[in-house]
Image (cartoon, rainbow, N blue to C red; front, side, top):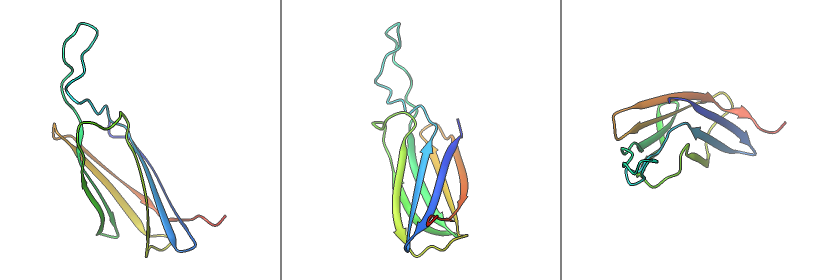
Length: 106
C-alpha cells in the first residue's frame, strides 16, 4: 500500500508538486456485499518538506476518495532540490518518498 507517484517540476520560478497516494481511504461507514461495515482506514496526516523545511503539514479525514491526489505550487525551490512527502493513517501505517525538482521548461 505504500506506493506514491510523485512529480515535481520548476517552470518560470514556480514549482508544482503532484502526488498520487495509493491508499484505500475507507471511512468506516461503507458496507461490504454482506452488509458488514468495512473498518475505517484513512490517511490522517500528510507532510511535505523541501530540503528539510516544511512546505505542507495537513490533517486529512475519512471523507476523501480512494488513492487521493494532491497538487500544489510554491516558489523558492531550485532544480535539484529534494521534496519529501510522507503520510500516516489512522491505523499507524505510514510511507514516505522523495522526489527531485526537475526543470519543467522543456
